[in-house]
Length: 183
Image 1 (cartoon, one colour):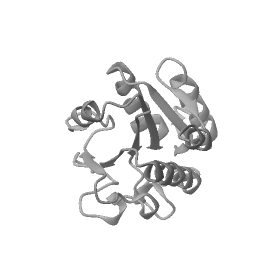
Image 2: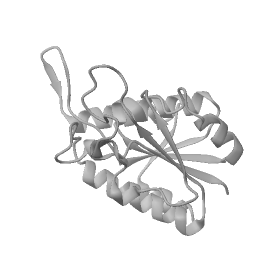
Image 3: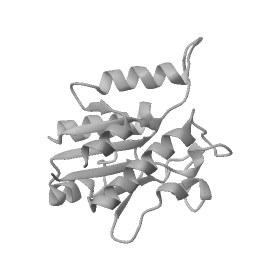
Image 4: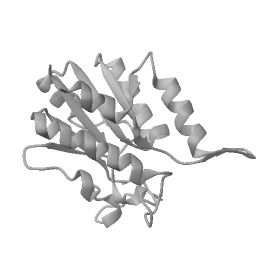
């Protein structure tokens, strides 16, 4: 067994008081922390990805701000890989693919934020690149979206994106089930 945990964008701006608060981000971060602790206990590899916004007009994850920092509950430890990205897809213009090929996981476990943006693009890219992906759905968070006059509540956005990713791109499981599968 050689799983790798990929934690994507669990950063302060997504939490209460941050510039882009997500629905139930604290609950999702707790589940991500559970995954992280399980991986560390088993000494399985962990890769952290953090977004720093460099696009003109960006309003969150700004360089040098606390909002762009990784949330304390999932801070990287010495020896864990950390990559900075500037786009939703964690593979775009980062060394992530090379690192994952070095680690050669039999299963890539993914958790993080925002489900409808960075998690969606990262999971789809990972699957397209040939990785067997498991998405810890309850260790992800998103927000309500609007399309014209229609507001889609965060719970429905989350369910729709998890449903869309499940099957063709990833196996969607609860973080607790993923942790149990490591034993």
